[in-house]
Each structure stands twice: as structure tokens, then as C-alpha cells.
Image (cartoon, rainbow, N blue to C red; front, top):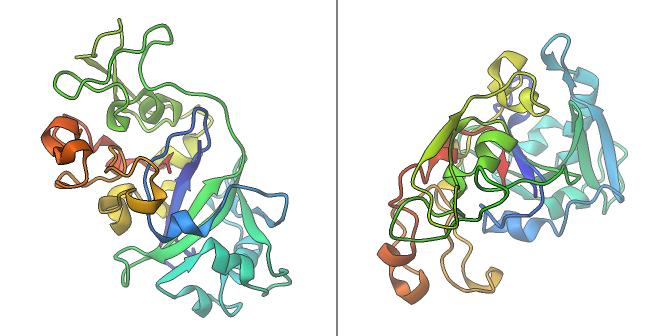
Length: 284
């Protein structure tokens, strides 16, 4: 499943990074708008690969590789070409600056993982920090929603915690090292309790989630990104053609649910539904 990062501010960095991870099983979660149309899949077989832009020894960016990245994703080969409101993965593939051939995706290394640049936008759509969405290139293992690998619980909308609610999932709290609450599944009934996990500085994703590593000051959280608070996967991009849970941090979407009944089929009123809003690494 894709894991995502977002970068902030064009000071020395090209903005905020949004990191998205790839784990199995994949979860159809988050953006529905141009980003969905912008990339077909995460594929580095036809990509230009930038070296590691992060230097962990000094907890800062590698200027050479970072400038190379900027030239590849710019509409004119300079920093000014990145200062537009929106650039899709297709736009980036079409650019031919910095020695990049047309049709090539851009993959950048950050720490131990490679990430494809799939979207550039602004924090507030047309203003604020420039944001780059990065999608992890390779599948990085499997994950589960709850505490148990033996029980699946139920997905009740009326009591306890739905087992497929991302805000209280083991995936976001433990697998992605974001910390926070995750559901205790002890039977095939709806879970009613949670366990709180702490972030680990020795976790494989610690670079992207633990402040002392230095990188998170350049990462943006979902709650800071305008489309993560509004987006919904509905219409032609959604074969179910209903509003889906876990798509947005909004808790006021009242239309498009199955039978058009938000109270019956929505997780929006559940405790901790928006828990992922302050994560640094999350699913797309």
C-alpha cells in the first residue's frame, strides 16, 4: 500500500513532503481529484532516479541531489518553475529539464526508501507552502487493522470501533510508527477498547516519523493539506459510487452515503476517526 510524505516551504527545501507508503493489503484511502488522475501506478522502471536528498549525519539536505530534483520537477528547470499552484505526475513526466527525457517519472531516495514524486500543489490550494506528494516505490510488507491476526472483528456502524476505521488501525499507529490508539480485536465482535502505541526511534520508518531524526520539520501532516480535509472518492473514480469512509478528515460530509444516510453508514462521528490528521506517514 502506498505510504506518503509531504514536504513544506521553499526555503532550502522545495516545500513540504507528503509521504505515502506501500503495504499489503492496499487500502483505497485519501485523495480523489487530480492526484488520482495524475499517476497510474508506482513504477521506477521508466524513471530518472535522484540520489539520496537527505544527509542523516548532518540532519539536512544534500544540496547537489536536491537541486537535481528541483530541475526535474520544474516547469522551466528553475525553482520558479515549481512555484505554480498544481503540477500532476503527468506534468512532471512531460518536463525535459536537467537532462530528463520526456515521459520519465521522477524517483527520489530519502533514507532507505525510494519515492516517486506524484503531485505538486499548495497548502491552501492557491496559496501557502508548496507541497510535494511522494509515493513509496516498492511494497514494503503486510499490515493489519487491529491487534489480532486471528480475529477480524466486525464492521458495525452502531457500536464500538469499526474494524476498518483507519484512525484506530494498527497500521497507522504501529506499522507506520505514527503512534496513537489502535483497536483491540479479541473476537469476531466489534472491538470496544484501544491500546496506545508510542513511536519508536529504532523503527524502520523512524526517519519519517520521529522528530529527533530531523526530517519531520520538513514534512506536512494531513490536517495541514487542503485536499485531505475535503477530498472524497465518489463518482466515476469510485466503482461503488458511494461516499467512502477514511477518505477525508472532514466530519461534516452528509451526502453520498449508502441509502444517503450518513448517520447509519458513516464513521465520521466515531471517536478517533480523524486520529491520522497529525501523522507524518500515511496511506493514500
